[in-house]
Length: 356
Image 1 (tube, rainbow, N blue to C red):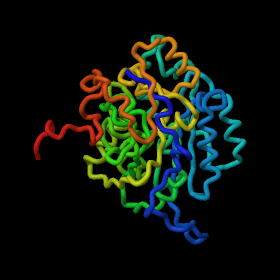
Image 2: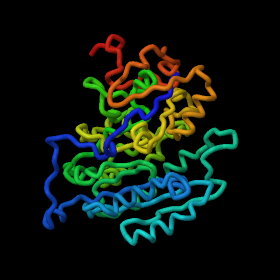
Image 3: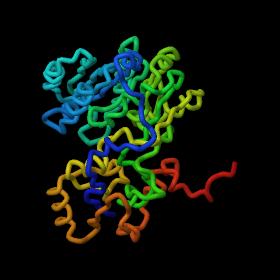
Image 4: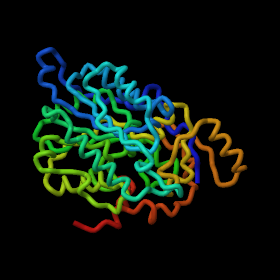
């Protein structure tokens, strides 16, 4: 097992990365009238607020300050602990485009059982509320983006979406993720190189996509009566991948933005490095580890001290693999926690794939 420190150290926020040759049209007063209306459905709770990460404030400030004007944001809370600060945060923006759709709080909305496992039907109820919020978007909405309040988007996202033809059904975003190349070796799975992806490629299928990485054609979604809550997944919260596969199977055209990583899905090593954190990749292949986690420098040092040179390895990965993880044996995640379907394209053994 290994623990990586500052896997990516960026000179600027990773969510601001750009690539040449993919500019958007200039926005003038006349052009602004042609902007597509984009509705954000933001699932949040107190941990995204001032007593937690503060990430919701950053997301709302990003939207509020954007030169792109045709957007709206519906906030929804379903949690056992109250998010007291939320109404004041929204009122302080003084922006009518931001509103609280639902604030369901109380013991009956707890996500976890005392034992630590998921409470039965929690994900089903959460997706039902997500569906209701999506239905509440402005009637002029072209694109709807369900997301969580701890994610971060590139400032170029809004104009890029506006430029997508309205006949497209789904806009797929590549994204920074703690599940990047999940069947590769610890630490090394985040290394960049000429043959490696810049971030996680959105495969628009189970284990290779995310709710926050798929922007949906709202009008078509509504006209076909779609809903995440109609899917069943034994309440594991996998409705996003199941829905992505269903839309592709039903012939929805997908516009895949691949030249930039427009989403940083939290937590990710990239966001962790930007916040001067330490990425713990020692148990990412377990339900408890959940793909890895970001800890403070002090926590990382304490982990190393407690380990005493045993199982943990301290390594540094910055933009390319330094080779320090090459001797690590492959763990059980290859065949158990992360099945073959989760493998990134570069990690798929072509010899094991069925011939066409």
